[in-house]
Amino acid sequence: MRNIMENKKEVLYNTMGSVVAEGFTCKPKQFDANKPIMHFKTQLFLCDDERCSKAHKGKDVAATLREVIKELNLSKGEERIKVVRTGCFGACRFRSVANIYENTQRNGYLENNAIWLKNVHRYDKEKWIKLFKTLSNNEKLDMSEFKIVPMSEMDTYKND
Ligand code: FES
Image (cartoon, rainbow, N blue to C red; front, side, top):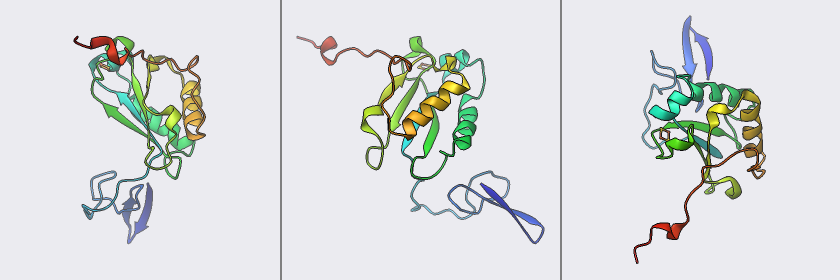
């Protein structure tokens, strides 16, 4: 986002380059229903529901991570990483939970797609940086370092 003073009135631009409506931080002044969403290579879906939030002790982790991503210069451009808050994944026993979604329709890295990370409330800033750098460099995540949520085999619940 950038600010420009025009006729002593501050004009705000959002990350998509649109002028921001007065009183908002990113809502465009002129709505365009056909404007594409901003490209991302990777999305991190961060559970923000009750039990995961408690694990984070009420801290706004999504906002903190967005700042870390900005510091790494990964908040825009080809390698953009976007953090999205979600509701319960039904994996509360592994809280706090986050899911990695690689944009394989564009330049996402298939090897890191659909990985469910557990206990992310235990990550310190250094570990988040390592995660984001690994993702942006399209390197396979080291599962001995980034623990994942176990998932049952597909045939576990077959009725026969
Ligand atoms: S509250 Fe996060 S997985 Fe259920």
